[in-house]
Length: 389
Image 1 (cartoon, rainbow, N blue to C red):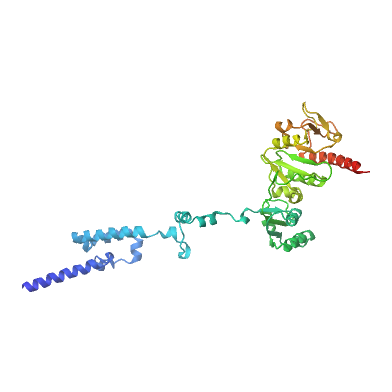
Image 2: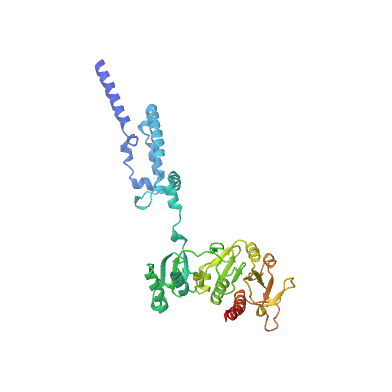
């Protein structure tokens, strides 16, 4: 009798040990859960709640077992919450693992070399689009830019002689030539007149004023000084006239001035690619230094200048007899008071008729061209007379 009781107890303990060693999901009456299919359980939550309420699990009937199972669930949940990564945030399509922004930032901070390599922009990323046949051809031949790619409009445009010359020059210099649609070229140039040709190249910046020695051409030197020229079309036209007429140097203020952009290059018909344009932080200091060196500073005013203590002379009556700096001011306001105070003479272009109210001057690029032609023509004639025996 005693042996039978002991055997029965031992068997009971072994059965419960087997139940406790099973997974948590296996505890409970499996027979009852088979009455509802997975589709029915997903479709009707109310039925699922009634089913759970009417069939208490074995753990609920035994408090000690229930406590043991609760502790097991809590421990499993804590471990899984620490180790699991939400798939929606770290896995892409096809199970490809994606690194979170926090982890990426941490990895970059741990490896400074990698961070520097990833954040350092490529040279091609800073490239700009030069457009137009003349600017592209001169950008290739002058060699002042680093050229990456020539883009040519697909179609009959690429068969024109002017376009073929640009393509041949690019091929000669080992530059990649690609054919693209007109829509792509229009988008690259923001609607500019590209003539079916664009060039991806490094930017062209102002040269430092003292980066080269003060070399001048033949005869008396004439420098053109531009203050706050903001319209790229005007700047391009001024550079084109200055280069054609023989100005020795062009210097521009760096503040409140138009940069040397592809639009300026196109407006200058590519002259910007060949002519060296200098930038200066303080034009006033530079002018005063030149005055001490014996240069004369000549400013420009409108056709109807205001009363000034500085003498105003028609440009046709002025003669360049010594190194001269011609100052041209911004489109709307002209020269600033600081630069006017350095001027020794002011030049103007007389009007050929009585002007209507509101019309006081020419476009800045047109006026600059007229004055340069007048001064340089007389200076050249004077040099020729002096050179004759």
